[in-house]
Image: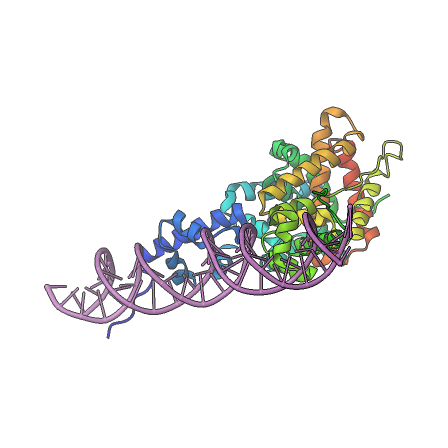
Length: 194
Length: 194
DNA sequence: TGCATTTGTCAACAGGTGTTGGCAAATACG
DNA sequence: CGTATTTGCCAACACCTGTTGACAAATGCA
């Protein structure tokens, strides 16, 4: 008996083709409206391969919907510019990975898919919260992070998911200037000032 | 031949039972994850009745997903309080109608359902835009309304749809104070001030 | 009361879903 | 080269979907 061989170069290529096709479709249609057969067609393989490679449609989604926000450490930067920096980073992150990123995938499905929603809450707790916590008093960290998320998530919804015309038409710099100040206020916890 | 009679008291009752059940389920599961049979079970009638009364599942959704934001006219109120007034109105509106309102229904489905998204854009144009337009210079009306929507929609998403713990835990007054200032800035168009 | 119309139930349809097993071809390894 | 293993396609499964039509019961009107 010979040692069982696994993950040959060919299998890796198709595996990534499936993952790429899944990311694109999940990101523009959401989990429910994307069928296994559609993913297979885009990856140019048989639907049954998806099950063999990933086990199930849900498992494929779980492997594909893993956002990495790459949150920067803004502890040492000018407190007046952390808001604009955060917004700019968020926009660049989204538009760079296009509609194949983990965050677009999650945001499309989170409203109607409980597991996607849970995953998004995990992203908040593991990535947004720690980054925002450092920018103000610890006792208000959760609220500050929550408010920052409400604005950034709303921005992503209106601009990329819902495609509200005025928000889509705005340039990146316009958004950075307008929303940056909001995020700065939220992140630093200075909204109670009279 | 006698005149065909229609909309008897009994038919009206079941018709509204179907609509009510549909509103509740659409609002918590979204359009795709809600089945005709589920709606029928909750309304305690036969699935086929839904088709006979409304024509199709999509037509039922269209009849049920008609939000009325009841936007107040804030032209004559104190400019410094319009933000807080708008946020408070938005929160009360949402929590009053519970999960049976037209806006919750739409927001759950808009991310993955193109027709629901179009409907939400219509609500923006017909209700949010006119109300915000009066609160500042006309040439920036679209952008101001877009920014207001991004924050209010993000708030609804994080608090009611995604249920981000810190945002859920905040009291209504805390949200009004923190987010009100943001909405005021957006609505009046004073975010470019150095 | 008599009769047309409506309201409701049941069963079934056609189509699409995720998923499975079998089998031919390609592939890697001794 | 020979062979064990993998890769891929095909057909089919069991299930669920929205929707339809036939028929019985209830109902409103003259």
